[in-house]
Amino acid sequence: MFADILNTPIRVPRSDELGALGSAINAAVAVGFYDNHREAVSCMCSIIRMHEPDPKAHDIYMKKYDHYNEILGVTKTPWDHMYRTMMD
Image (tube, rainbow, N blue to C red; front, top):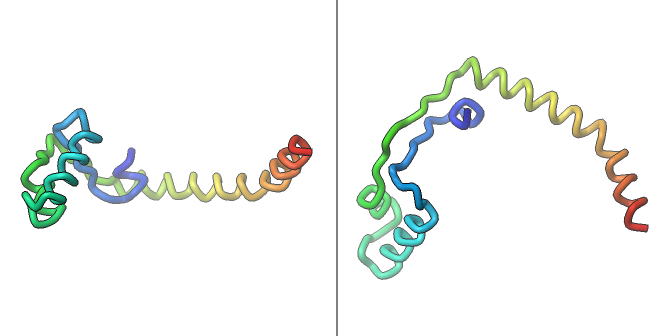
């Protein structure tokens, strides 16, 4: 779904603790163990699978997003009014 919506390949990393891995990558670059983040990521991360985008699904999601924005535009004024009323 992410690949289809963003229309870009999605790489799924092997790690379950991505926050800790990101911190370790930043620390390794900060102390000079790696010259940059690209190098650190290539050495410290492994990909277990990739998801390629489906152009047809992407088109469907973009149409749904257009509808969402249309609905958002129509409902903005009533929601803003309700919020202002509640804050008074």
